[in-house]
Length: 114
Image (cartoon, rainbow, N blue to C red; front, side, top):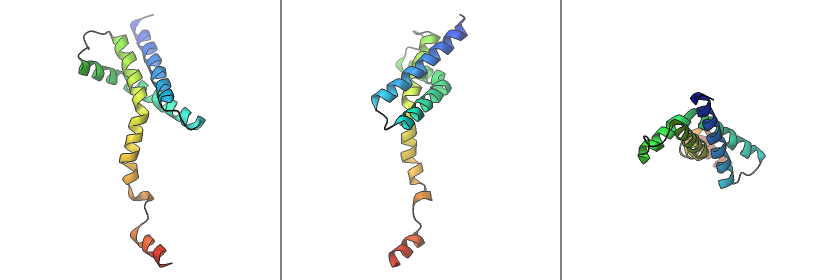
């Protein structure tokens, strides 16, 4: 196999490993949550695996010491593992602060008068 094939194999292995660890680390409440978390991990690992691997290797100072296959494996696993927590942080930080789910002042006053 050529190098491109090995990179895709490493990316796939990293994605599966990161998603599996994510499921095992904090057990999901049901099958739907498990499937959703696994799918989110796979997609994020595939999309951000190379970039995450490069960032981690650069921050650790090992970018020149490891090969591209190890870099892809590490990055895909890290991106896949962290995807669910990153989405949770975004949901808590931004979505819950939107006024869509909060009652308006007039609606609250009307409810108090009844």
